[in-house]
Structure formats: structure tokens, C-alpha cells
Image 1 (tube, rainbow, N blue to C red):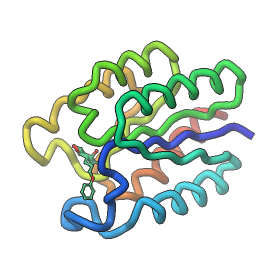
Image 2: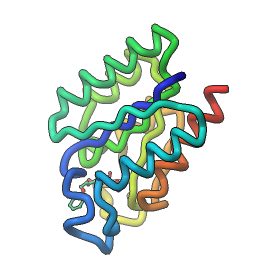
Image 3: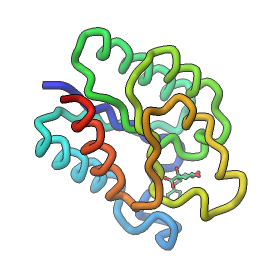
Image 4: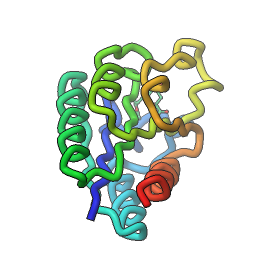
Length: 149
Ligand code: CA2
């Protein structure tokens, strides 16, 4: 069984507790359950993580690269949070490992402040999904399942 790695960046541990008008009221623990159910329905295993630290996310993408080399990675779903708009290190990690990665945002970043319109992740990603709320995580997993067959 192949694994989907779902990675969440800075402040996403606060999901459901603040800014509900932007991010909704679902908590990250509930998002993990939603992802587990999506993975189960596609015959995939889930590895779900969150970190507030850029280097930790880089380490995890490198870990995904090792799973890819071992033939056991379906792909990565990455909500890099605000690091989306700043991190060349994450861009380099994705490019360097060659993992199939979906860039995911809960909100429609293009309908928000202009500093959210640029992403360092997008040029290295297979696909980009934003604006579907937390349901976007399930859609991203379905997309990876379709690519993995
Ligand atoms: O829409 C998204 O998923 C974002 O990746 C969320 C990031 C933001 O910086 C990106 O531009 C778009 C922010 C994550 C912080 O999440 C919070 C959730 C609840 C309360 C406070 C922060």
C-alpha cells in the first residue's frame, strides 16, 4: 500500500480556533480524520503532520523522497501556510526530491492580499488547489490517487 504524506506548515495547528470566516471551524485533528477517510477510500495509507518550522518541513519532504525511491509514496499534499510565499528552501526540497506534490490552500489565496498571490511552491508542484475549504485536502488526495494508478 502506498502512502500519502500530508504536510501542514506554520499556524495550521490553530485551525478552527481563529479566523473562522477565512478558514472555517474545522480543527486540524478533524482534517486528519477527513484525510484518513479519503485515503482509506482510495486504498492508500496516510501520514499526517504539522510543523511551525521551515527546516522540519524540508526534512519531511526529503523523507518523502526516500519513500519515493523505495516505491512506497503515492505523493505529498502540502499546505505550507505562509511559507508558501517566502520559502525557496521548500521549493528546492520539492525539486530536489522529485516528489509528486499537490500545493493546497484552504482559502482562495488569489482573492486575498496581494502578498498571498505569489507562491514559491507552485513552480515545483504537480498541481495547485485552493479555495475549497478543508474539503480541498480530500480532493488533493483523490487527485494523487488518480495519478498513482
Ligand atoms: O489558505 C491557506 O490554507 C493558507 O495556506 C493558510 C496560511 C496563509 O498564510 C496562506 O496564505 C494561505 C495561514 C495558516 C494559518 O492558519 C490559521 C488558521 C486559523 C487561525 C489562524 C491561523
